[in-house]
Amino acid sequence: MIQLDNTIAPAQDILDELAEYQSAVDAKPDFLARSAEGKAKFSAKNKKSNKVFNAVKKSLTEMCSGARRCVYCEDSVGDEVEHFFPKDLYPEKVFRWDNYVYACGNCNGPKNNKFAVFHNTTGVFQTVNPPPKQPAQQPPAGDPALINPRVEDPLAYCMLDLAGTFKFVIIATTNTREYKKADYTYNDVLRLNHEEREFLRQAREEAYGDYKARLSEYVQQRNAGSPAAKLQNMITQLQKKSHPTVWKEMQRYHQKGILQGVDVRLDALFAQAPEALSW
Ligand SMILES: [Zn+2]
Image (cartoon, rainbow, N blue to C red; front, side, top):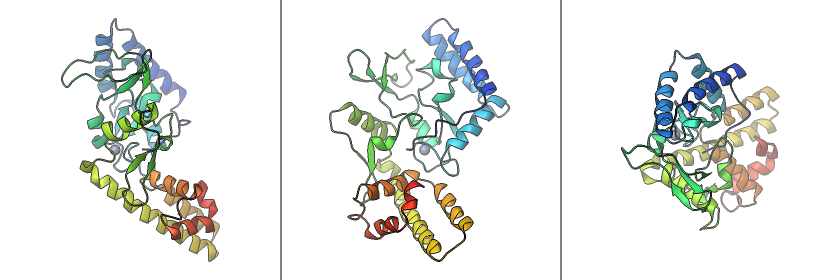
């Protein structure tokens, strides 16, 4: 899961049209009516023939890593406009640009309308999605208990274990709000460590080898005096790879001084090419 570049946005006329769609939803008299209207209107508008959503998708594509990878798993193609705040539960955010990310069907399907908050008054963690096939109810006010990649860095909550398992390990202390939020996001909702998504773990391991090979090749080419344009192209290609979290963690392990205990050769590559720490 990666943090997205929140400075990317569609043009103002597109945002204005979204706001107009939204006001029609907000005008409905009660929560159930707004929830139903939001869902129906989103299905009607999220079509290839709709220029507003074509522009929305163009901006979401710009936000994605590499070849339009899903924000959550960083592996499959992101081809569904996903609402971070589920549209059933938060009809007031159905047409809000800052509520959209591009996700893949494998992530978006199971996520569906799963959501939880830390209740504003009690601070208690509370899931707010209805049981299957039950209508949604208006959630209580509270901070989201799901990490929002539009505004937060998921790597502030977790580290990827590069030493062997290639699973996400929660950094926060147990029994804290941050721990609960990371556990709910990574394990309950997105299941990024789950054995049913073993292919993701394998893909992260493969990405590690690939990033390392690219860095090694870059150092060789740079030392051999290759032209700047060729080197820049190598950097650009590396930055377009799937699983950018793996690369971010390789950099972080080196910066924290723990990479030496994991991979001496990779650590030495970063020492030889410190410029790679900002790619
Ligand atoms: Zn995905």
